[in-house]
Image (tube, rainbow, N blue to C red; front, side):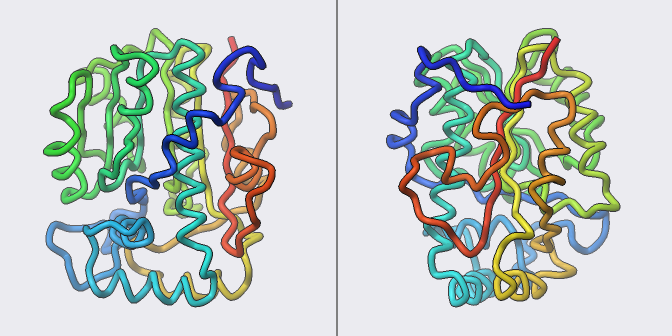
Length: 293
């Protein structure tokens, strides 16, 4: 069952989303505890955060990542546009949560900083908002810690979402997140890097069970409805931190178990923004839900 955002709230519009069309962090993946986990200074292997950074016209990428990005762009030239759509969707989710009164945010799989970041979107609405960036790539974490964590109310943690209990312990013991109060958790372009055997639904459930009623969950996830040509190119990432496990809309919606979805539900991310945005050959699904009582 879906619900509409409050029509009297700024969250019901995308007005501020247009202020945040800068597509941010290279969203970091979760994989198995093997050679698909990124290591510091591992320049000779594909890295999901660096590929994403390249698609966002960032500077934290290497030739091997640019080559994969170019191969993807050859089959879907609009991919950079989709990256901006996805970033805008994530920022809209943050704005909706902040407009609803949520004052604490956890960005799981934050990726490389790229302004506007989550804390900038949240603190524009509520300057006292607390934000925690979590990533499992030590280089990404170092960037977040150096560039983002200097702001008031902002913390950067090194953590792997495949081990949610570890992250929850860090959030509860070392940051300003109070799970007795509503929290917004964002996973933008993260869960399709978690293989089925690594139990993405169980990961979400671990966080959900600690979240207070009224908490928000936002997910952007690659779709199996993407063009076969794009899906074929993505097989070239197998065995690296950029390996993906795209899922159907129904599988993605199932990740929201225990949350009530806002309208328009789990749909391509651009449908959350404006009705006139084009379709893309790589389909990125987005959904935002609220935890009930």
